[in-house]
Image (tube, rainbow, N blue to C red):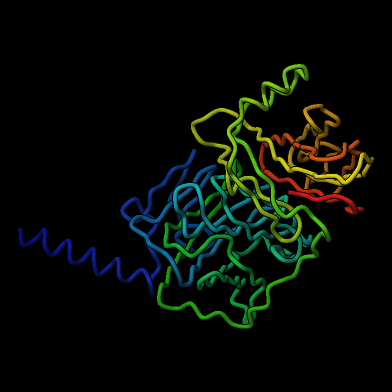
Length: 366
């Protein structure tokens, strides 16, 4: 009994010491879920080699503080990441794109929304910064988190490389690291300090908004995309939907469907209907510019009028599928109420919808 008590006290003291000491890379402190992992010396450090998987700190309840670690980044295409404030299928995330060394999108700050990361919306200098990677040495990473703000420092630099507003309301959660896919990644010297979270020179980037973008959409429950194949059955597909969830314009650019609907839950389907009501003063033809991710069928007053594909690499091998007003259709509006529905299907990268009328005169949008 006495020995057991001593062991518990020792473990408790070690747990408190996480804020100042390197956390041992072992199964006592980490849940490891990976295709393969090896605890081994690497380039002068005690490291974990992680292939296609993750390590999650046990008993962590991280809200504010500092996360530090060393990572050896390879030249191969990979997205090694740190997740913090992990709660079920939502989290904050920062990851590297080492294969994009020197490019504007060599890095990425992002949120996880019901299991989905919407980098096709949250892109550009507000959430990324260029970095030339040295693949022959360790890269030191420090992330400072306080409230709804975060900053990242690389290689012990004095100034932050990026400051950004976090994507969720502050809520304590777990911390995880993911590896570099099939090529694997080495991580070492992980430190978590819950007591130090000083944000300095916080200057987040800015994003150019789309003037006149639709501010709110009503979205349905999800269903299988294949139900859209037979246009004669569209009426029943629409009638079978459950409604009531709302999504709102973010960044002044697009609405994030994943705020309201979970793609990867136990129910089937990868498609929702996003709906607006257009009240027109008269019968008229008006241009509607819109964007979506990944695929869309546009339906006006129950009739399909457009089908498109904006998926990653759908247009050429470098195409990212980021959101914007890249498509347009002329709407034959009748006097009174018109219902415009965009059936939006998603694979990955952001479940998104946006649109605007370049000439809204005589129209009321709900």
